[in-house]
Image 1 (tube, rainbow, N blue to C red):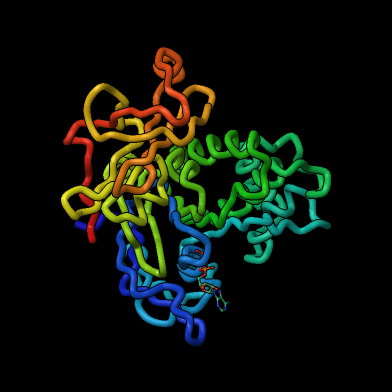
Image 2: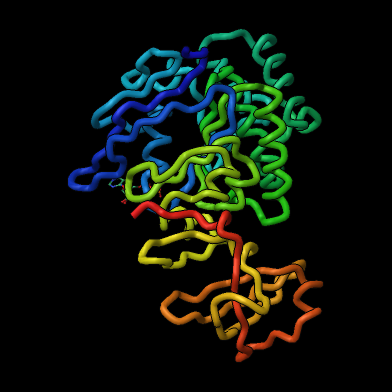
Length: 324
Ligand code: ADP
């Protein structure tokens, strides 16, 4: 049964001349969830998002929201709203007037639109700066205003294009907590485009991994990370080794590789200290380098150094066979 606010892509395709940016993708997003569209640069994430927003035409296929095909509607009529990477705030308007802007376009009176803008500014903790101009705000504050402005149309789906990329690493982690909180409070679907695995894992209920204009794998963040189905996903999500056993490719998490008395003979080629853990890179005959990650305490209890001859093992159950 279809629940309200289902967002569905059906054979969705985007071509720019000879370039196929999005190649007939089918997907139903779980309603009211935080979705990250993840993949390397050029894989078609932004084109997908822009088609959903109505900022890019659909070459073939359909976009449905609540069962209704919205793919030919103007952006403001779709039930979606977009927050842009550069925030696109109007420099000459106050924070409050930036947030209220779309209501002014709809002819809603000043008192009413200001009251609604203030409510949203409270939601993003910016009510106290409502009279400022955008240039008088920090990057994180500008982002909150952009969020409030996108949310004022009461969208069923909020679209976010690399929303954290303009922030420094510290602020990025803080803002990602805020985005997650907002999504939970509002209960609407957030569709967030990113090329950062960490960001997707931290935020998403559902991770949709794209590669070469198609969806490689979609599912809960833990499932996509723990059980990558393809070599691309295993490598792109990180934290895995790809090994060849009996002629087939498998993924094994780096922290599931044990260095001990038994197993495959290997030679340590590098040791990298990562703070709370240590990554030991090894060479095994007939394989690509295999990385074993261990806690710093476990590592410093050994005498592993580059050049050391060790043995690698893992529990069979931790191996995932990859689709050819
Ligand atoms: P991503 O967001 O994953 O980086 P895009 O959707 O921006 O990927 O791009 C997918 C492909 O489409 C790329 O090969 C890109 O060069 C191409 N592309 C994107 N926008 C345009 C455009 N306006 N005109 C021509 N080609 C484009």
